Length: 250
Image (cartoon, rainbow, N blue to C red; front, top):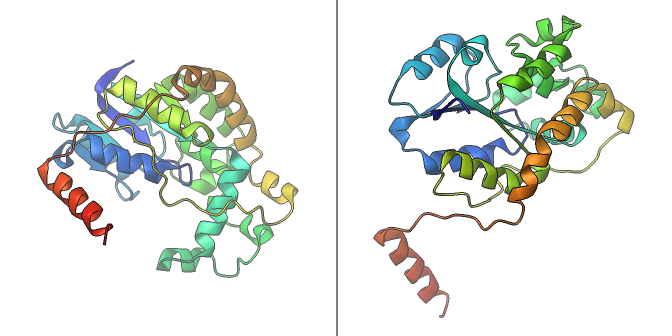
């Protein structure tokens, strides 16, 4: 374990990362954490946060960049079974909740159409290989090898499919006061389209995930079924809970 006082969480989209992000925000005060969800001047933003002694937790939708690899920070991520992740990604974009989704999904109405969107292909390998430019990633025949080699730089790994055990594991490693498992921003699990279509989007993610399971999942067995830790409530939340309970009796 490297410098456990400085945690970097690589939030791969649609891996239950939103739920973990909210846990991070409950375990680290606002002035001690840094959320980075834009790639504008990403390396500069990461360098600034890594060099800031006040910041204890850095998290966001950024890949495993060289500046992170070279740092002394503790690096963690969550993986998810690739086809389930892709289906969730597709259904999330299909909701077109913002202008970015509208632009990305123009002319994309089926899973087969979705394969044309560069962001849909081998997303977990892209994040772990460190690429900012998805087109460059897709053109690199050695991207999977790079991603697998970067397993050595991960200090802790969890899995969406073993989420409760993953949170218990992280909580013990980083001395979190809150390890209560809640699910947020969960997408549909409906398997739309032919299986081969989803497999075509994950030709690198499928072996990457299998390797991650073989290497990291056994560590989680000791954390299955552990009770969650929850922080003690302060006076105001206790009053709110009492009033809520009281009102439910009438």
